[in-house]
Image (cartoon, rainbow, N blue to C red; front, side, top):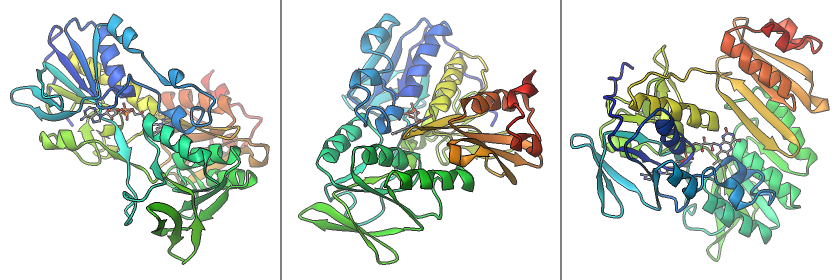
Length: 415
Ligand SMILES: Cc1cc2nc3c(=O)[nH]c(=O)nc-3n(C[C@H](O)[C@H](O)[C@H](O)COP(=O)(O)OP(=O)(O)OC[C@H]3O[C@@H](n4cnc5c(N)ncnc54)[C@H](O)[C@@H]3O)c2cc1C
């Protein structure tokens, strides 16, 4: 996309919609890029920007406090003269007048606007999903508080969806002694993003911790009792009793505000590598976006790295500068004592090489396309992950035979 260059206005009011990871990055980068005018960050959650990853990990497990979730406290924002408006929703954008309307009745004019509206949990498309008690999504701090409280009284826990969030929650619930069953409609876990050796490893890891992993299990019915979920039924007629049900079946980008304002959206707000939308005064970053790549395809990423890097690009674009985000994507997931670190995009791989022995719980899976390394998933192997980041950045990599040889150090290719 050849988006028009934003008209830089270093003293005008910059408005950021969404006070999450990416919105915060836009705000702070605007200041560090030299913006001297007002910066107003508007978020519909009632709090300062916070880290979401611990919501399904340390915070849920009771190993991190709520204070530790805060990325930047209001006082720290005030010091940078970043105005935080919490608990207020941006309802509409008037792109002609360059004005946003807020749920508290105010209208604010902008010189530049950043959309960092994030995403929301995909709702379970079954009757009763929004009416029965005991059914939870895991996206916000409030969700996690409610889940933690319900988990305390639950014995049988069913998780719908064997993706990262469902599995991280399952690990915490199992460690707390709950009887946990994960129902995954696909034939393997995390099938959208990892190769079979990684899926198989995680299925075994969870089973070793007493979690029931049911693959090819499509939930078709919710069974309620006195307004509360009691069980779920799968397409093959089985019934799984549940005191609580946690649904982790993916997310939907919050792109409606942009769409209603006439910005091109398709699986997210469409942006270029510099986070520019089709409107020269509006940028977008983080989970709400879909990035147009040079081959015309759209890339959707849902990660902290993407939120931060696109946020930096968005701020630069509002200042009239090009700062494309082109680095290899990376991500992590913590389940039990196992850290998965992923780098690169494995979609379209034709060869997978396992480096090391999965039984040792320390191995990597290298993905190749036409002989070229395109991604690495590392399990308790941070050195492979860090080497992978640099290798993919430089466009160099091992041959499949080198990757399979654990005596061969990936980092040696960086010398
Ligand atoms: C449980 C969980 C675990 C995760 N674990 C990992 C992990 O291990 N590693 C990793 O890399 N990533 C992880 N992620 C993903 C990562 O947290 C997200 O990619 C990141 O938070 C995206 O940042 P964002 O700013 O785009 O969106 P968000 O953090 O969602 O922030 C967007 C904010 O905008 C608000 N908003 C939306 N519309 C409006 C409006 N109209 N007006 C005002 N405010 C609005 C939203 O309510 C929200 O507060 C995890 C996410 C979750 C939920």
